[in-house]
Image 1 (cartoon, rainbow, N blue to C red):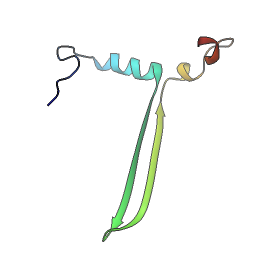
Image 2 (tube, rainbow, N blue to C red):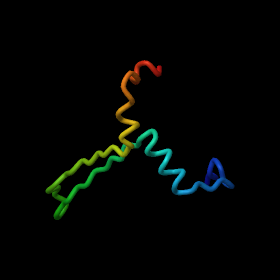
Image 3 (tube, rainbow, N blue to C red):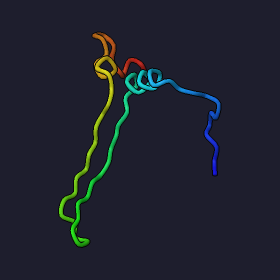
Length: 67
């Protein structure tokens, strides 16, 4: 059994949300509905969670200029 990278570090929900919204996160998943081992419906889901300011940089500043 492995131990966490930072066992004594506690993260507040506000700090976690700030970090996620600042950089963004992609959540993906799949759902399959089946009856009698026959797949009836297969759904793939993907969503991007980010702040608007992270997706739309201010005028004159582009992602290419930061690299």
